View 1: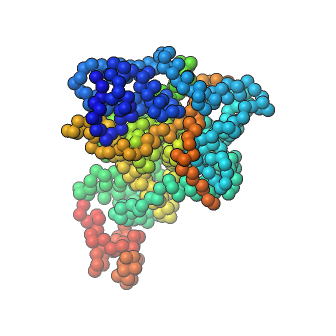
View 2: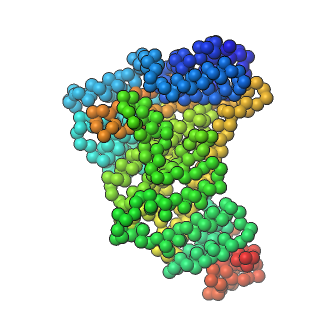
View 3: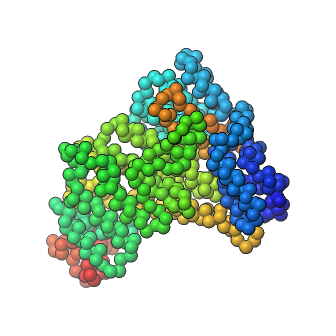
Length: 587
């Protein structure tokens, strides 16, 4: 039985032509891989099997009651799970690599590990397809960071010492990541001139940095009042929030927002001993700091979003382990990245990571750099996993987040740096700094008012997660649901580009950090494509009315929260606005 030739599905079915031409008995993983290699020369095994999995889902929906078809599909699923033992499959992919740069990269790595630097093979012949250039350079950004990473990797294989930042440059480059978070003099950006750095940073920040909107007015005013009444103690602000929380008309969402504000005040009131470096920091683990200071924040932000949850305690994403196992095929008992906390979306029995978080108790430079190198790769792996779901329906709103918590100066675990990971072009990812803040430490009006920017960003962060979850769920439903017209999905995605072909594999630290055992991702550089198919990108260089209405109001009067009864309503001396009702009078 073949797929009908009159199949009119406007869906992502990557192997439609093969399935229409081939009897179902020949729908084996080996034959499916051959068909994908023919259709997409240069495709990696991981990319190919992602597409096969997508098609298996679709075919199960097309033939829900055709037993011999379902049995064949189950057979392919078993082959994917046991692919390491499939000799024919290994032979196919090894032959495929013979004609590609992927094979040359492996040879480069093996030869380089046995040579002195003076005899090192020339890495300058390798070029990436990102096609993003600075000024008139003939070397793209992706090519630059990867070539340099190869040179550092040679030193790593020779057990030559690398500084913390040299290692991070190697890690990021071998994982196809441009890191814009680290702007130190010896960061990855130091591979470019000052002029080039400025243009690269300006371009990507303009494209990907978020512009947080103001909080809803009711919450903005609430925070302003809290700040102004908490001049020497947070207790008045806490009391005001408790009274607001007693209002019966609040929704669950509104309650969570007010509780989040209260949480930041509670930290100053109840846990100052956790934040001071003079305390015995060894008494508390990093998980203790996350549980007390940070977990509550995530719970309040996302408890109302269905199937989204926080997972803490150094858990390991399954796809991280699988990806590392594919890189180190000869190793046993492979374990992927251990992440302090993850925000995950549950789809059926599968977890899909949206946010990765690492906690360092103090400001130890080595620990922070190592955590950042891990977060860069984990966020990129998370993004690859989501791209596999959305595939040709990719939306630029699909990107992943990382939170890095650390100490700063005399304070422990109070500083937080937030970044996002995006796929910018074919073979190039970019990590974007979005926002940095530290937990409020002092009950004083001005520091608390300045914290409003962080609250606004947290609103933006939450809104993006909500939007992204909707996109992912919509694509998952589309992938799993067929409407009454046989084989036709509800939305046409056939004209969209397949962004999964842009993805690249990630480099993982070898067992015991032994440089001689390190393996470079085989598809570090993409298949060379005709220049005509590539787009070359060169980086070249009402408030007054309120004031007038209340100009005669004396701000010396007013209740404990700054509210003054006027002819127009309740004027608040902190927000400078008129409220129709006093927010506490209905309680």
